[in-house]
Length: 313
Image (cartoon, rainbow, N blue to C red):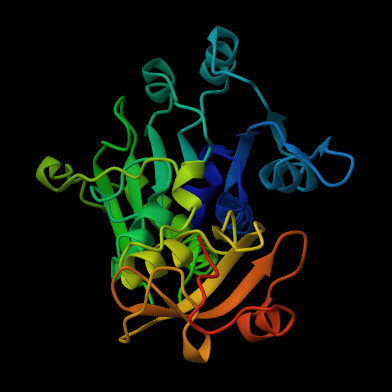
């Protein structure tokens, strides 16, 4: 059977929700895989009217006339539906619900998860953010056969990228999403044909990428400049690392670079530098409350801040 015949004869399910998953689904469709159904989470309130918007995966599926399911939980009704449809494999990419073991066992070739880290490093909900926050120099995509534990299953393929000095969450997110999309079709076909090694993860090397909590997004100026810089880039542009100004306003800091000079915590130094617990940061771009992002020098122009004054808490 050649590759085209294999693709024609395969029946896939897809589960995903955010923008990370969209290029992956779109590539499978473009490469003529038959997607029998799509599962996605319900949309969240957005915009001025705070109306529920469908997920991006919902919109991709609708555009391509694929059956859509949006359950709040994967209960017995969903189990019966999935059992009846008898797909060969389910592709899962940032779906957001945990798949029960009995659902994982339904497809002939199991459930293939697309995870945004080099497993076993950064299992869990926020692998991209945690890798940047920790100062990792590389990350990647892992294609993993799902089992009961959280991101514990065997890996069949990994693709690696470097994390550049100026790469923020959005840049790394999009790079990994596109890399996964470029790789998904070939990975599925080779896996089905038994041409990929199935390798257990090394449990000694496991780290966990817990969800980013609100309290973590506030900048602590007593930390070293490199720690603050990593926080800024790990959650930029959204939700954004923020500080409270001396005017008691929240200010997001979107980009900054480490400087070797020392200064007091949160104190404005020359050349747009701000002192940290160790060394200092040159602030490059900020976003004041309710306004668009702007260069830090433009922000300072409208302020009464003086050099040697503590401007950030």
